[in-house]
Image (cartoon, rainbow, N blue to C red; front, top):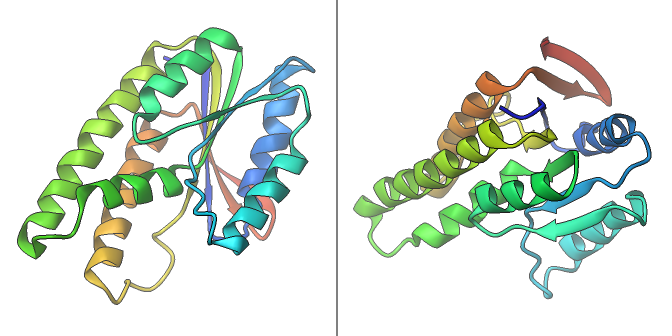
Length: 188
């Protein structure tokens, strides 16, 4: 298991990434942190690009950033070999990428393909977390407090992200729920 696994969740703009940055800095004690970014930025999405740039500006210059695709487990393994503190931000974007990989060609097959893809990728991530010796902070959006999505894709996303969050939180030493910028300790 990771030297310490911390799971941080919360709604949109709840302060989860800011809290995770501060906690990673505290844990690292001025040593470099490996920041694993999971967002895939489309150059035509200027809003997302601006938010990603703001996140980059909030990180110390001496931190190392790795970009993760769908094989997040391999990136976590690599990061844990290079640093004692790893920050993954965030599982919400990662699950979105996995869903896009599942495709939507056949409505009947989509949920099954998405579930299989997310399960396989999550197994790889859980294995990496269990085997690495670094302190790892994992950030994810909380989907359980809102209304049910009005679309099939939205429902599949909410179901799968909820399952991913529950599995990572179960294995975490500490779990934090961010509400209005304040951390609420769920576990540890």
